[in-house]
Image (cartoon, rainbow, N blue to C red):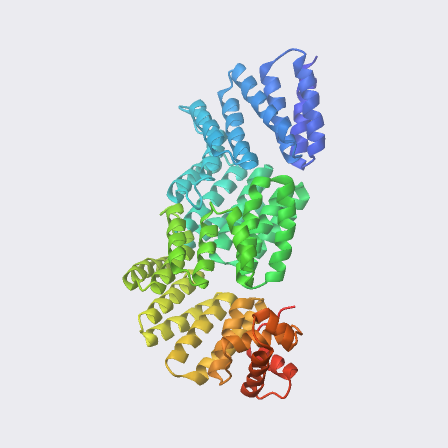
Amino acid sequence: MHPATEASPVDAGRDALARGAWSDARAAFEGALASAAEDGDPGRLAAAYEGLAWAAMWLLDVDTLFDARLQAYRHYRAAGDRAGAARAAMWLGSDHDDFHGDVGAADGWYRRARRLLHGRAASPEHAWLAVLEASHLVGGAGDAVEARRLGAIATQIGQAADDPQLELIGLATEGRALVAQGDVAGGVALLDEAAAVAQAEQVAHSVALAWSFCYLISACELLYDYERAAQWCARAEEIARRQGLPFMWGLCRTRYAGVLVMQGEWAAAEGQLDEAVDALRRTRPHWSGEATLRLGELRRRQGRLAEARELFAQVEQEPEALAGLGRIALDGGDAVRARELAEHALRTLADTCRTERAGSLQLLAEACAALGDLDGARGVLAELDALAVTTRTGSIAVLAAFAGGVTAAAAGHLDDARRRFEDAVTAAERARLPYEAARARLELAAVLDRLGRTDAAGEIAARARDELRRLGADVESGRAGVLAARAGGLRLTPREREVLTLVARGLGDREIAAELVLSEHTVHRHVANVLARLDCPTRAAAVARATAAGLIIPRP
């Protein structure tokens, strides 16, 4: 058989991969395997198996993927092609991580690839291996400094070889690592450059595009920069649909949903998460935990705490989940558990991933303040304040100002607390974080109430109540409503609120008595007191006024 004819199936397969025609690519590589098997040339077999592995990956044929990758490795070794064997080894590592979450197997294959490449001149294989190893280090428990170094290797190799796909993934890795380190300006500059490369250059490798946009959007989520995230997400959707990459769209949607949660667009976020969960469960089940984590945070903010706990428990190895559980504990009055969870989250996060520590630092400062450990709170607050200054990120400034207000209020320094909460409101408004702004207003109202400035407290609490209601944060809107009503002169005892809540559900005195284990006479007396306190002629009017004031939250 003529050599040109023998090579054509592999060439056709590679062309189909570049076009995103995964089924055509598979057929071409299977044809190449049949042809190469006639003479048993290990090099030709290796190239055909390598191409088949990529086609199988995009087609989600996991068994064929792993078998083809392993066969490619073995045949490249038999052919004496160390670079080809290293390439197969490193992607076997990535496959073990992506499809099975098997970090041990992934690290073993990465080490094998390093050994095969040792002593050889810089090559695309060196660049891709650096990027793959950096993926473990970019955030969370990883080493952002080392991740940046590895990303720079890929960038340099890509520039030297005039290879835009290597340059793209290298820049994105470097930028995401710099953001994690706290160098926001430097990181965002590299990420913007990566986005420009993705848009303007011919990047044929689908993995390079997918990986880069994941880093771009995750950095935006970390910084709550949802305007830039929206732009990048739209571009990612266009690429994902054009090249048939459902997992890319699913993961990007998950991360964009996290930004929407912070933006206060909770209905939109839920829609994004529903689609993302469906896409990821079909394509990358191991990655669906990211959607679970973000849905847990949404449920926490909505006050659906039982659901939030269950969701966080599914991914409790993640520092964000630990912090979410800690926030639920603190809001429920268990400051001891909140401090434990915050400390656990911070132990999980690497010191080099400074930006990602901010949320857990805020939680720890507030928990210490609630426990009366003011020295501990101030120590944590110093780190958080320093992080806000060095990153110059509005979202972290909000966290620092809020934690400072809580600490000052716990120490009885009410004017300092007032200033801190005012700063938190301003920073949250500038960063367009409505939930954080409303929570800061609520705490500001509580401080003003303690200072005896009830008119201002009532006005600010009422605004916080309205904002929290609009968002759908039922628990906190209820608390704001109680404060607004008290400051405005409307007050009900806990038992009266309990009785009126049951009245709002349509229960009569006898049913309420049975529910609360009281006598009908006692229930009737509570209802009469409520009507008098609220100056209402009927039960329906009392329910309407109490609901408007936030004294009760009627349930179906």
